Length: 75
Image 1 (tube, helix red, strand yellow):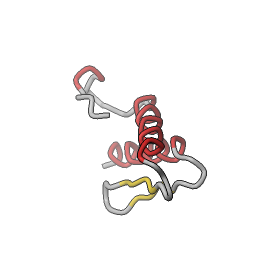
Image 2 (cartoon, rainbow, N blue to C red; image 1 turned 60 degrees about the horizontal axis):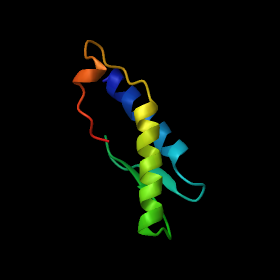
Image 3 (cartoon, rainbow, N blue to C red; image 1 turned 180 degrees about the vertical axis):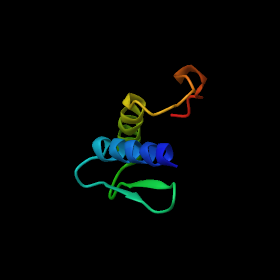
Image 4 (tube, rainbow, N blue to C red; image 1 turned 135 degrees about the vertical axis):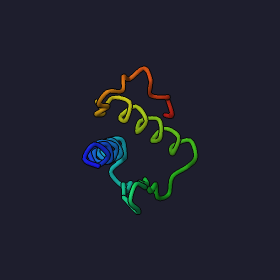
């Protein structure tokens, strides 16, 4: 659980850093995070999503015995 909590913290940090000033990053469940983009066009939402994904990929997630090569790319 401590490693999972750390991963949630790192992903939340990536959401906060990738969002725009008027966007809202929230945790609405145990492992669910959301980014609310008020008054946002689809193209702008895609730009924010790409920026957030880049922020997530830039994080150094704890992996224990697992190497980064063995983690499937989902973002």
